[in-house]
Image 1 (cartoon, rainbow, N blue to C red):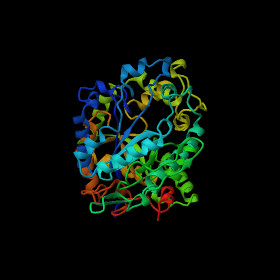
Image 2: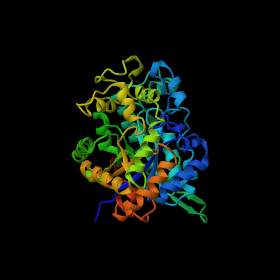
Image 3: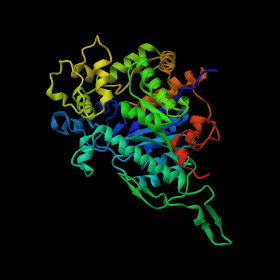
Image 4: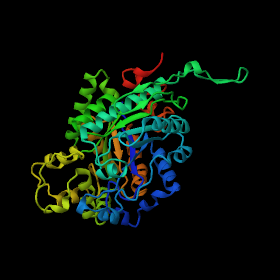
Length: 455
């Protein structure tokens, strides 16, 4: 039986995310990111295509490294303007029955006590379909505007995140017993006080002495995702993640990351196969290869070189405007997203990775390959990536929303279903059940969250 390809749709509540400048394409509806109907339509398209979840990225500060200004980011709508990714989930959940929602929230700028309630609320309202993409945030602009003089160093952000996870696990898993809510009208008791416990956390970064403010949700702990590929990020993913998002351009590079993180998980006492890996991919599909490549060339006409440089300047903490656009970029050790810097300088030794070459390379595809062709060609390439990369699925980008999602669902998914790679019907209700099978709504026994349960 063919291994199922797990699919997530990738969006951010903004105009320019992975594809920069393509909002100018006449078919693009990216400017409608602030409309509820836009998100409901997106969710329905993905559910029709058998996607596990919609993954919503986020950023907490403007991109202001390029030329020391936000001007380039504003001109191309790159992550600014952007809306809060949590607030539309309830509406999308009400318009669908099975699609999950993985939302990005930073441990650096949230308080775990309030955040745990937000996610429990969404898990209640979605019927157990919520996931959390755990990030530590890499933008200096976010630090400045959220109460810090400067951002915490890279590894220290992960140390804060470790304590953050300890607190939310205590709140989600350990504060309320399974049968604490009795709802006994005769005795007048809704919650049995003896079965609700203070978490009594007194740590270096957080103090949470009291009980969780919410009753347990279906999954208790949301499905946990992580996307960091630095050494600290890999260690964090191996300990906490159930799903891992990868940004890479070759399946052998993906395989190296997958094997490393799975081995770290094994050494930490987890089943390495319990971690599911998703590589970002942009798929341009049409009835024939020729039509698909013509469509890609059409999209490339709208890609913004300056906008791409502005985005990657912020991600890498290097102002690429100050460099000659045709001079090779050497590796620089920054507190930004180190894996992305290393990616371009080691991706292909035969390529001169200049700022201009990077901008042209990422113009349409963002952080992953642009797979272009007929449904057969696309399915073959996704299968190759799955097998050679030891992957579980893909984070499918939507550079011309919602056209590219709709094309994928209408053209590529039928071929993948014919091959037994994408399911026709959802087998279960909760997001975690799509990972581990019907009936598995709670974290697995070998996951660190499970250590905080009351038995």
